[in-house]
Image (cartoon, rainbow, N blue to C red; front, side, top):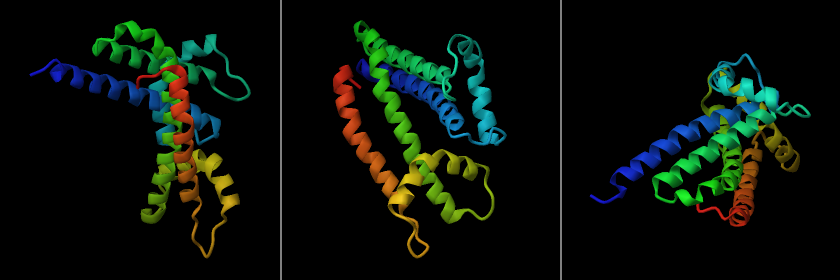
Length: 190
């Protein structure tokens, strides 16, 4: 057994736990941004999970123009700590301060992935949904900033809405065009 025997599982555990929390914080930011239903069970869960660190942070970092900047700072901070811990575990602790910059492209990738998977889940739900599902309303609000422009570009034809496919292709192209230069600019090893 090599040195990676315990390192890889520990890195996996750190990334999984931190990424789940960063996802919750970023969803909170995005759901507030799109004015999603606060009383939805999923919204309530996200609020309860993210509220403890956000309450004191909001006293220091107020919102601006309807945006919850404290959520963004919390997501950035948690992602930075995650990357620092991973670097320490893999023996590259000397680069830990770089994680403050390297977390930025990772957060952008997360936001793009949230939109990508929200559109995909919304499309699947539209095929199999028999009645109202609490997730459907949140997904409608969350994907509106991406799907509304796509529907203007390609309106539904003969009852077939191809705008989710157009939006997903655009998101993947954005990931391909934005993330590599941003990672190169920050010198990210991730």
